[in-house]
Length: 113
Ligand code: 5GP
Ligand code: ZN
Image (cartoon, rainbow, N blue to C red; front, side, top):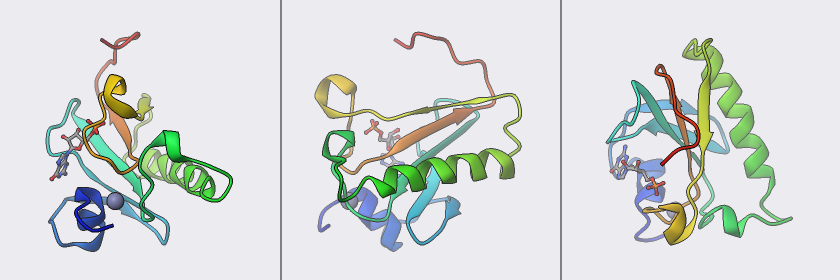
């Protein structure tokens, strides 16, 4: 989608540090990491947020969680990790392209702030 930051990162128009890629999913290091390991995992199709997942595009959600398990193995996140998606204003979403934060390599408090 034109003028979408994460579509531009997927297309390579904006550089990023790639963590993982397949036909459906792209993952890259967050520019402002909140943990020693902090990746952003996105579908290659433009979906606005978790509020826009439906019967037509929900296979991307499954593909993202397949990627999560692959990344956990590749990055040796044996001590655990957290996956979170922010949706809408109260959810703290700042980029309007569905994405999942994958955080690891420190103890993560629950509940979050
Ligand atoms: P949100 O706040 O929407 O859940 O997450 C957006 C995330 O994208 C933030 O954690 C932010 O640091 C990250 N981000 C924003 N712009 C860029 C960028 O240009 N490159 C990378 N790698 N991450 C970005
Ligand atoms: Zn997009």
